[in-house]
Image (cartoon, rainbow, N blue to C red; front, side, top):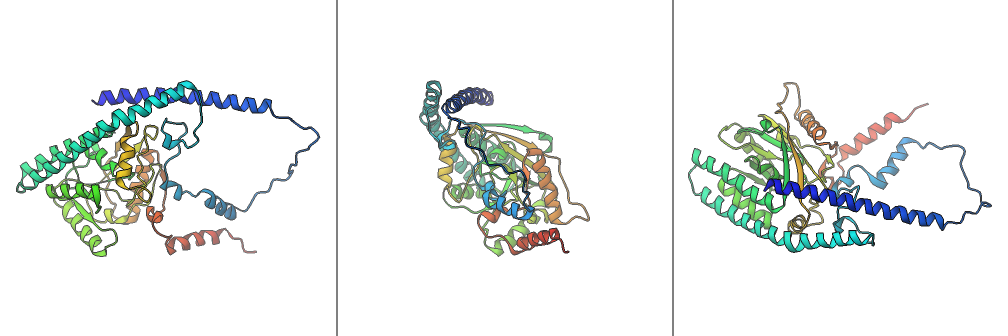
Length: 389
């Protein structure tokens, strides 16, 4: 099945390349027509500036931040260098050529009338299998057999979900996969990240409690093994999570913990600030870098604009889900290293391996105002630039 989806992805790339050449050819034709139709009036002189003004870097950076800052652009879909034949990635509808139009209609029919119904059926089967499996496993007493059964059964469940997304995943350096008692940390793009990672290893999940469809899956998973769900705004929940994490990593019979320290979904172009809580509990950290190929479909979930069902519908009508997963060598906290420094070191390694931008900003900025300490830090940096005469 994997080979089929890989060949399918290769065919799509050839189609994208063909259509891009047609689009570029049409654009060149339009530019040539415009140049031929332009009348140049030699009597009008062009006003030019002999002296180039170089603005002060501080106001310039402020203007750049207003136009397009490096933070808020991480909370929107990544821009594509070429059209991938999805109308959601091209709002400028225009006729290019008869061949491109035919390919688009064939692709539309394939995605919505063949792949989408098939994927929905596979997803429903996967949900039913997951709920039934976790219910039966949850009835068993805690034992080595129960843990063995859950490990194999959970991977099978998530492989069904991966099949529903037409996932083509390439795993690198599998020898670095997390083991029992360890903590696996990864960059976060959407809940699909769990499917991608749990497709290759079994984890105890740590995350925010959700309602709706995700809540049903969380309650099912929670019956079978020791997952940790919490409410983000509850201080008592955070303290309880910290305590349970420490207990979990000290028990080598329990599954490795999977955590997304960013605490929110980023559009897979960068890695934002890692919360230090995951790095205070001790144990070995197993970093993982996940990089999606946006040409086949945007894996980013903008939870502020989409419900999870809307996002799921978008994923099930995309071409495919193609990504690379890198398992990095395990890392431990140094004796003279703070939790924040350790978190930044792990984040830097993930960003470097996944080809992502390493940002210091908190991903929660898309939900809240900038903290006063960050404002003070920027003011301090600005004061250093001022020259006192």
